[in-house]
Length: 307
Image (tube, rainbow, N blue to C red; front, top):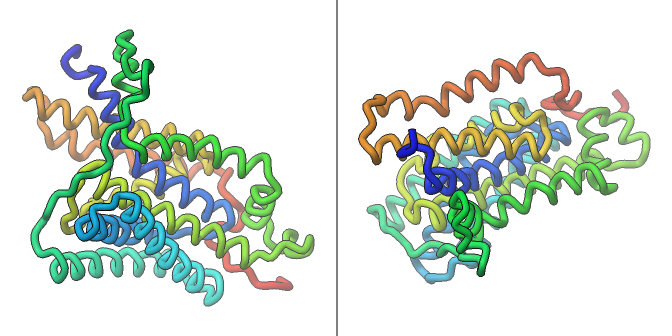
């Protein structure tokens, strides 16, 4: 057991949690306003490819992040138009976005890159003094990560503050709980939903970038392997609260980190069990989430003024 639960495993857990946190926090905002976006994984794939391709061409990591945010914003606006303006069935439109992202990212990759090529991703930022702490490996666990890891974890308290302490957060929660009452109070329901779904798209794009230019530093077909769907499940698992989402992200990433460690040390535990563990946990989380009554009342329900 000592060979499995090492400081490097916990450090890996934090790194692996980064795309989960970005994608799930963004999706949480959309769902809190009443819009479910099942296309998160497709947007992640597009963000991952665009970020990787821009870095391949320019060598500029921040430009790659900006490109991922831009494509995420664009696809988020498309989802908002389909779900909010056209009032389409949100589950079906989300699957359509996923399939679009999966196919388009592969098409662009084959035509513009061809074969997987690695890039020099974000380097680890060793925080002075703190990164040298040896007690329980705390320095290695918490203070030797790349920039996007710190940004992802900082996003959690910022999101909690926005949702619970600001007028914007109050509007988002009101629109997700009772859009008719919010409309009567003068809140523009469509505008709020456009804003949250677009933000969710940007975070999904950034989650993809965190994979292709910060964690794996490469792009290949279906790079996310369904990670975006797990991020959606994390929103339910976390009961639509930022810290709950973070807890779920850490749980899933810890399982993944254990899988990597088990494979590395050649444990007798079959690797197939470790590989399927995150997906089993996803199913269990959704089963428990289905029994909860705390979800936004208007989730997946199109808003019709006057009804």
